[in-house]
Amino acid sequence: MNILISGASGFIGRHLSNFLSGQGYKVFSLQRKEPSNPPYWNIDKNVVDLGKCNQIDVVIHLAGENIASGRWTKKKKEKIESSRIKGTKLLCEYVSSLKNKPKLLISASAIGFYGDRGEETLTEDSPKGTGFLADVCKKWEKETRIALNSGIRVVNMRFGMVLSPYCGALKKMLIPFRLGLGGVIGTGKQYISWISIEDVLGAIYHIIKDENMIGPINFVSPNPVTNRYFTKTLAQILHRPALIPLPSLMVQVLLGEMANELLLSSTKVIPKKLIYSGYSFRYSSLESTFKTYFK
Image 1: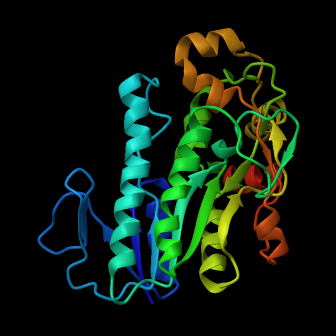
Image 2: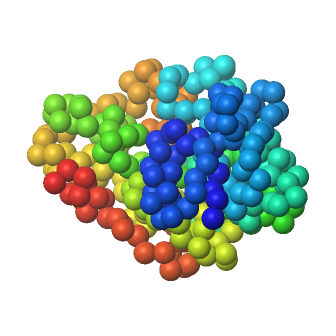
């Protein structure tokens, strides 16, 4: 089976490429810089060139502007939105036009779709929330209907916080926590819906194998936790205190709108579809995840 990955050089993409190659799949990276040997794409020029890769069985679309790098200026927000919506539209239009279409498109999305919902328990059946990320996610997922309408099975991965000791948000937390400078953000009551990188890979593999998996799927563990619990657990595993809180006002001053949507919002999400499909989580508790990562 041939698998094409956009965003293969990113955090999830690098892990996924290695994992799928290890499972015996032939993995192709959709590159942004025009190589001598495609596949290649250019969103601004509306160009996709698969070269000799004339039979792709699965497309995994991960590419998009990093939402956590820098303040959300008007220009930054435009990049976040356009990189996802224009890129997804271009890729879906291209694969839908192929004579030999892929059987499956797995496209990234995010639990930002649900917005700030307090203690409400959310599943794939829950309606869209409000806010910039909710609006982006709705438009992002809407573009994949192009592929769906052409007969391709489509899955939208609504990612929560992906945990890895080597990359992403958790890696950024390690230095202050190991220095004893970690602490609760805001009230600490806001929910964090998280998933280990190992279960991201496992769930994608599960979706490839299970043809009944379709539509939005929450990529989170079955056990969301509050920011206070997350902070306390990480500090205990690292054997460090976590006594320095970061008040909401300070976070908002430092990060602006991004603080409200990424750090202070509460999104308590359950992976209903993965559970009902029989997927077995490798890490379902935060403690077991941290103990494995930092043993």
